[in-house]
Length: 269
Ligand SMILES: Nc1nc2c(c(=O)[nH]1)N[C@H]1C(S)=C(S)[C@@H](COP(=O)(O)O)O[C@H]1N2
Ligand SMILES: [Mo]
Image (cartoon, rainbow, N blue to C red; front, side):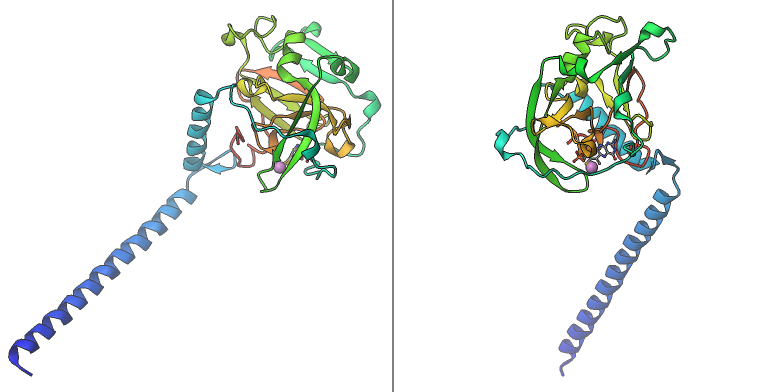
């Protein structure tokens, strides 16, 4: 072999070796960063079930949702005949068999700190059924990954609050011109307080949010939340609390079952 060719070969050999060393160095730095980053994340404190830094991301998402939320945005509705007849029942926390339907009433606490007896309202299901009825057929979505088109009827949550002058600091009916008078959140709970959700007032006032007492034109089956449940199509299934017994208002976040277990508070679609 000529001298020149030998030089060439040696050069490319060195070149390949250098390339390999650089590749390995980059690879180890990459793996090292992953390990250190993962370790850092896992040694952060948790905040309501989510690791601190991840919870911060969820909180920022929530703020963005609140700022840009518009009640003009409606969830898609379907013709009633598209609703499934055999509705899947999912989640039975707070729905124990010992539930005494004959003694059920909706207990509404008008203000968070008030102790006066007239600050609490007790409503029978007939009183709620007497309010204007509204219906919705929509694609009900669970965060577990399934969805089904279902039909529900009840009273619009906003109509309910307006009728009973609820959800305001002043005790007047909610008024779109005075959003500052409204409490920021509504809290809802089952009779045994085992399942509970908190929902921001904008989402409660959304025109498709209803307090439902019917499914497929019949009274709510037990496993679907008899006698009263929340239907809030702009949110995932976790917020559609079944068998509501308690309602209250607050300017701070009411406790929320799945939020405490690491899900984001909004559960917005
Ligand atoms: N009281 C109560 N409400 C609940 C739950 C629950 O476990 N307990 N599960 C939620 C979840 S995760 C879903 S997906 C829906 C399911 O509603 P369905 O059983 O009527 O289909 O109910 C929601 N409401
Ligand atoms: Mo769900």
